[in-house]
Length: 357
Ligand code: SAH
Figure 1 (tube, helix red, strand yellow):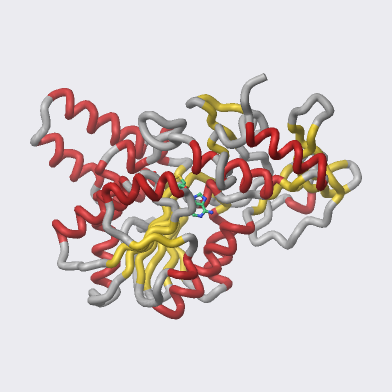
Figure 2 (cartoon, rainbow, N blue to C red):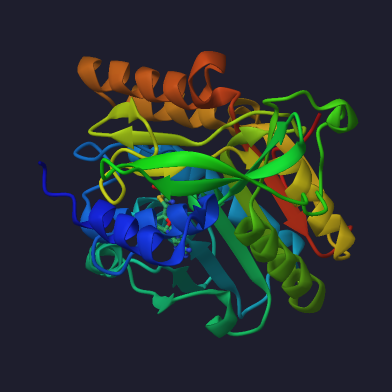
């Protein structure tokens, strides 16, 4: 038997207290304070299970840095400005942003990072001068620019499935053989912020997902934006309109795996429902721009111009690496279309760059 401490902990808990909903499972698998995936594993970057846009190329962080500078000018260039990043991973995006801001503006931001993993906090502290927080509540008030890249896809989701007897919620159960399996419990479906258009005609087997933590996060951001002014940029993979489907996925050693197979050792994520986030922002008095496909967003910010400038100073092999990075970030079959950008602003006059139709 392989040594799987977190699986044993989960099975013991389920045998003792009963099945757990999917959000509880995901929370424990990713963030258990000893064996959770973000606590224990070398997850992100070349050595990890998955790579992210800022780890692919500095071009990504540079474009976001220029985007931030433009927003700051539109905000009236406030002397005190917080830049906030939840889920900074290895800190690569923020390092590229800070470098770009120092080069291309007179902005003197205070950097606030929201991170729950002590292991990743240590890595971030090697390269960044910042303030660390467990959540938004301790980040000081005042105008801010927030960037969240591949943060919301890591937040726990709940799943509901239509059965012949009506809606049921997905629960995780323990098997007699000592494994984990998916089960269903009859349930009332919570009010959906953005439901699939054909929700009323759901067939047996259709699945809808909700992400209460992502919705709470955007509620808090929108409320703060109304009060303090500023902008939030959410970049992630997901759908622009709500659809039926099971989007839960796991990456284990770089390969797709069953999300129940390796709790604590696999990266588990789900599609972000951008339609729901946009509705929440609007319901709390903020304004949305997008969701816009990442490829088009980055091109509108000048990615190709910057790539050409870099290639001008580069050797032959570096030039082809730059071309590969541009392709991965923007091509339709890479990160260009599935990944999307959504900006939320508190002030209707602030028009963030990159969202022209
Ligand atoms: N933004 C980075 C990393 C994405 S991985 C990049 O683009 O490379 C997800 C990040 O979110 C990790 O840093 C993880 O530790 C953090 N995270 C996950 N759940 C969190 C939570 N509930 N609160 C704060 N950070 C969380």
